[in-house]
Amino acid sequence: MVKEVQIVKTGIKIPLAKPKIGVAGKTGFWRITKPVIDYDKCVKCFLCEIYCPVNVIRVEPDQGPVIDYDYCKGCGVCVDVCPTSALKLVQEE
Amino acid sequence: MTTSNPQSPKPRPPLPYNMREVVLPGDAACPGCPIPMAWKVLSAVFGEKMILVIPACCSSVVVGAYPGNSLKASVVHVAFASAAAVASGIAEALRKRGITDVQVIAWAGDGGTADIGMASLSGAAERNHDIIYIMYDNEAYMNTGIQRSSSTPYGAWTTTTPIIGKTEHKKDVAKIMIAHGVPYVATASVAYPHDLYAKLQRAKKIRGFKFIHIHAPCPVGWRFDPKYTVRIGKLAVETGLWILYEYYDGKIHLSGPSRPYIDPKKRKPIIEYLKLQGRFKKITEDKIKEIEKYVEQHWEWIKRHM
Picture 1 (cartoon, rainbow over the protein chains, first blue to last red):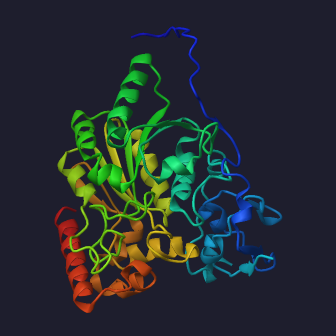
Picture 2: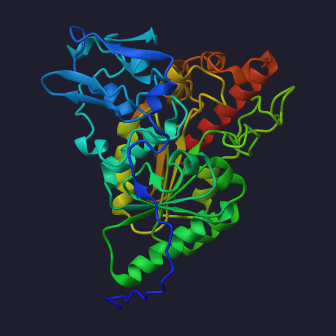
Picture 3: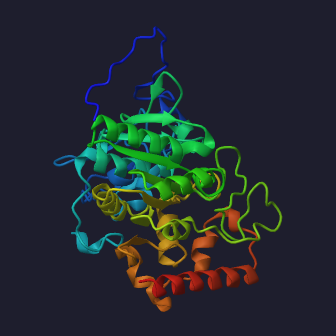
C-alpha cells in the first residue's frame, strides 16, 4: 500500500475551477414572477427549503423562511409544495 | 398543525441542515430544474466528501464555466461515453492511496447511461468497482435540444419524434443493472427527497457497484410550468408509471411512497400525469391504453421478484 504519493512539479498550470456563488451571474435577474411569504400562514414544515432548486430559502427556527432574492430564479416550486399556501407568486415589476 | 398538511400527512424530521452547504446559489440551471434538487440530497448524505464524475449532459452546463463551479464538492468533467470508466479508475486510485472516506459518484443523464455510456457502465458493473452510478432520467437529450433518447417514454413528443411521438417503450436501465447482479440497485424520484436520502444512506454502507435511477421531470423538455416539477414527479409515482424500489440480497423491496400503488384501484388515472405535460398533447386513446398495459406488465414483473 502506497501511503504517500509524491506530486511531481511539472510547471504546467492545470485549469482548476473553484467553488463560487453565482457562476451564472445574479440569477435573480431571470425572474418574471416572485415568491412572497405570508408569515402568519407558515407552519415551518421545511418543504420549501428542501425542494428549492437554487438553494436560496433558509427556514430560520424563530422567523420562518427567508428568500435570497439576488439568486431566486422565480420558478415557483416552493409555491407549489407549500401545504398551507403561505407562499404566493406575484408578478415582478 | 401538521394534520391539515395534504402533502406530508405525518410530521417528518426535516432533512439535516447540511443540505444547505454544497450546492451554491446562482448556478446555470433553468428555473425549476430537478438536478440541483437531487444534488442537495447528495450533499446531505456525503457533504463535501464526494467526487462527481459528470459526462456531457445538462449537469456539466449547470455547474458553470471555468473559473467558477457551483458545487463545493470535486467535479471531474469527462467525455460522454466514459463516466463509469473514469469513476472506476478514480475509485481504484483512492483505494490504492488508502482514502476510504470519499465516495466516487458517476452522475450521468439518460443519454449518457442508456445510450452512449451503456458499454462502460456494463463494464464497471461487471468489475464491481466501489462507485455509485446515478442516472438522472429527464427522458430525452435536453441539453442539445430535446432529442429522443432510448429512455423517452412511449407516445412522448421530442424534436426528433415530432408528429406521432415515440413509438417504442422506455428502456428500463434498472432492470438491466439487476441482471448484472450488482449488490445494490434502486429507483428514486426528485419529488421524494426523504426516500432518496434513505437510499443513498444504504448505498453508502455497501461496498461494490451501486446503481440509482432518479426520475427527474424537466420543465423545458416536457413542456410544463416550472413550478410543477415536484407535482409531476409525485404524479408519476401515484399513477404507478414510476415505481420506487430497491434491489438487494437478490430481492426487490418496494419503497414506502410506492407501496400503496401495488393495488391498481389506488392508482390515479394516467391521464392526470399526461395532461400536465405539453409533450403528451397529441396522445390518443389507443396510446394511453398501450401505456396502461405497459404499466401493468411492469408491476407484474415487480410482484414476481419481491
